[in-house]
Length: 271
Image (cartoon, rainbow, N blue to C red; front, side, top):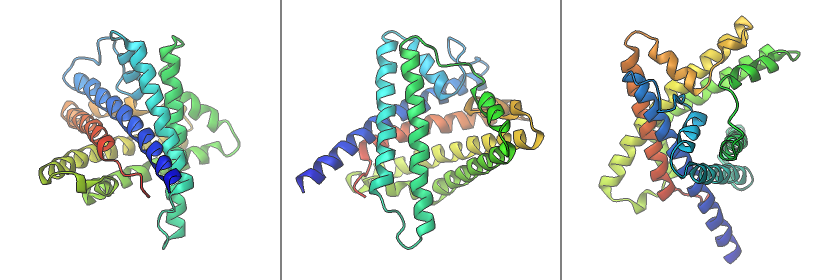
C-alpha cells in the first residue's frame, strides 16, 4: 500500500509541475496574442504567439535561462505523467474502443510535450528553438512519403477531432471531473468552471483552425498551407473583425493558462 501511495505521490508531483509549466506558457501565448490584437506586434522581441515563442520570451527576461530550464523540466514531468497514464488508467471499461483512443491520446500528448521540453532545453543552452516554419517543414517531409498526403489529411482530421472534444469539454463542464472539486469552496468551483469553459472554448477555436489548414495543405499538396498555433492566431487577425476575434481568443488562451495553473493545485491522479 505504501509503495502505491509513493507512486501516486510522484505522479501527482510530475502532473503538478507539468500543468504549472503548461499554464505559464499558455498565459504568455495569450499575452503575446493580445498584444498583436491591440496592434503591438507581439512581445518585446517580436516573438510569435506560440509555445516556442513563449519560451523565447521567457529566455529574454532576467534569469531567463534558469526559468526556461525549470519550464523544460516541468514539461518533461507533464510528458512522463501522460506516459504513466497509458499504463495505469483503464479508461471506459464499458467501451473498449473509447478506452484505447483515450490511452493513445496519452501517448500523443507525452510525445508532444517531450518535444516541447527538448525545445526548452535547446533554448536554455543557446541552441535556439529552430525556425518558425517547422510545421511546414514536417508537413512537406511527410507528404513526400508514399501516401503522405493521405496521412497529413488524417492528421488534420484528428486535430479537428481534438477541437471538437475541446468544445465538448467547454460546454459540458466535463473538465471539472479531472479536479478534486471536493477541496474547493463553492465560489472557487464557480470561478474555475467559468475560467475552464472560456479556456477550452479558445483551444477549440485554435485547434479547429490548425486542423483546417493541415487538411488544406494535403488537398492542395502545399506544405506552406500548414500552420501551428501562431499561424492559426494570425489567421484570425486577418478575418473581418479580426482584432476582436483574436482578442477574445487570446483572452481565452490566457484563461486556459490560469485554469492549468489552478488544475496543478487540484489535479486528481488517483485513477
